[in-house]
Image (cartoon, rainbow, N blue to C red; front, side):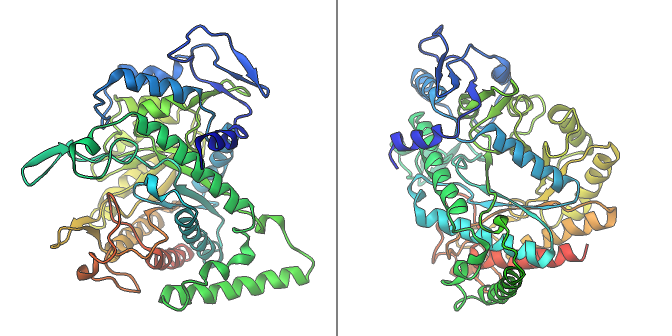
Length: 485
């Protein structure tokens, strides 16, 4: 989609929001009204307090003036999401935190500019819709569906450089920063990529909205989502049996004169790691309804394991915005730190505001998680507890491929459920890296992938993802665990 069309589509969503601060260029310009929306409002400093603090994992751009120009352009662009949609997700996550719903959050490790196509987006959405149907029907629980989508173009890295055959270059940090190809030109951070990320995110959101409201997500499509899959996969065959049960239930309801509108569309929200603070700040706006700040790059944003320092910029930025906030908690997280995150990010103790996404590793979750849950619960805070069983279970195969064992992923989920069952608390959801394509990146699963298979379709730019079959296997197993709580 061309940039003009993307902007026109995004403009439909901007009612109720105004700019965070005046443009870098043209300071002092008078506010103007466009379609009832005030733009180029007076400078608001509340969202930029992070600039005085250390900020981890930020690119080192060689041209500071070019970066300033890009930020100025982004500040003039329409919001990608509406503040009211963020409020709606916060209300849904409140249900998760209270034990009344389950969060399914999933998508690519890192999105790519060349994967913004109807097929790629539909396949990811289809996988999440199928997983949601399994969890809703088999576990009898409302499922809040949130994609790692329309903004997940940036990745934190353990090292700032990469060396191959004696050549050292900046590491690949995602398409929003630099190119994947291992050459000097590609690896130089380029601020113009921030505008490409905006346009790719706008195009992706356009397609997601069309799919989720235009009939594709109608629950009566449960069979259609599986037509290309049922014959070749054990999980697809199992899903087809469940789809027949859903179909029978829908037919019964229609025979009784009931055909709810809620079955014809689906609520679907976008989330990503708020890693590049220049980009996130440029898309932060003041909501004209409330005067509060919203990061309009996505409905929910999270802080990663490598950027969650309490006295650093990412936590400070998140504390100023009204979006639902997630924070990744690894095995080194202490209960005292968890309580401090609550003080900084959820001082009003508002259910739905804060989600703890725990990524301990299968060998640590049963030992490390209980104290966190116990002390947070004792504090009176109502947070949503989510398991990320992917990031703590990565290893390098003999072939050199970074991979994950499906059994380790499953074991961490089991440990997560076991801890919550023992404590009488609510296992709120799962956060997984997945794709709708038949990749060979994680080993194991019902339609088993072996280590020797990894090279066949290893397509990820960063971390290994579950393929569609493995994702459905996981959904069925999680539904069983939830029923047993």
